[in-house]
Length: 210
Image (cartoon, rainbow, N blue to C red; front, top):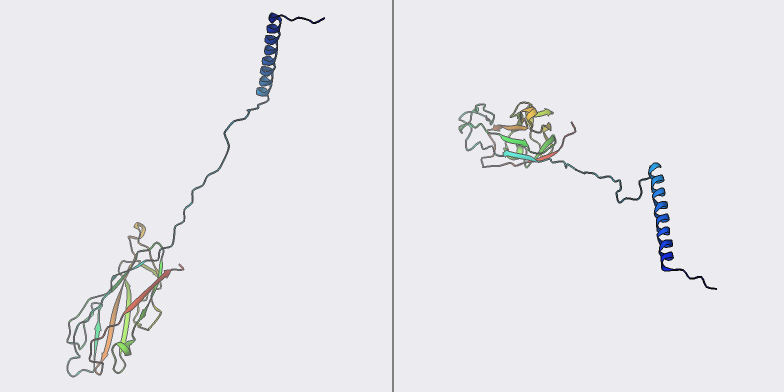
């Protein structure tokens, strides 16, 4: 015999099932909360970084690149003349005195080791018997060259002429000392070549070791 179930009975059973289901869910969530479970979220831990590379800049600026002794000759009866671009008076020379320098400035961000090559030696530039072609380096700003300043009278060679082993970077801490001057001294014998001559210096700069 079939058992007939009324609509009211079905509705009652459905409501009861829903209540039981909700109750079980609430009990489970309560237990999870007590256990410290946080459930599933969309958040995730991660890391980030910022990178920077500062390159080495060995820029050497030739602020003034010319010394011009002009035109002159050895005065009568003398066997030689001496010309010096570093304020010193000429000796037995008819031309004008000069006070000129080749000026080098460190425009990079590291200390510089500086040398230069020349296109001529004394024999090629001046000629005659026992000529001299010398150079001297001095700080334009005190403390510019911290190591290896070529401050004496140095004979100009064709290559690897030292200037300064460590030319400083100009900062507020060192009063922006980063510049040196090069002066030139010539000993001209009476039998020197009677012609206009020019010699070129090519300067090289690399990062100093100290």
